[in-house]
Image (cartoon, rainbow, N blue to C red; front, side):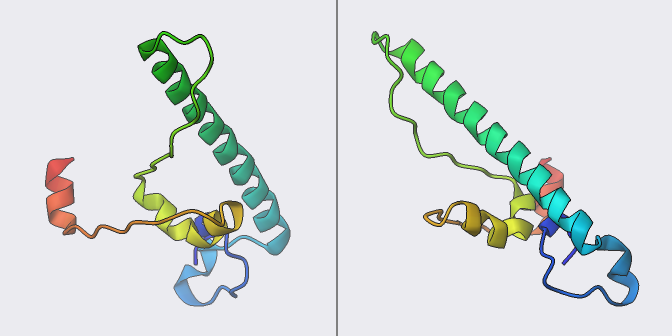
Amino acid sequence: RPFYAFDDDTKPTGKDADQYLPPDQMATARQKWTNAFLYLLRKLTLRAQLQDQAKSSSFSLPPPRRLLLKSPVHMARIRLLTQLFPEAQFIYIHRHPYEVFQSA
């Protein structure tokens, strides 16, 4: 898998070898991405709570809702995401690429 999947248990071969990082750089890139991703999720959770609080008359933050991420890029990171969130559920919806391109 390419480096953006953060999967360092395979050896790069062939024409795709330039998409891989050395193991030490892979570990650093994985940790940086993980920290940034968790920070983003905390921000999204807080934003949703603040929006819910604004809709209610309560001054306390409501319990967080389940996050739904719809970025197809995360399909390359399922192994890492299941390590971070063992209880996570994944829904895969397949669409024809031409239809997706036309709707963008």
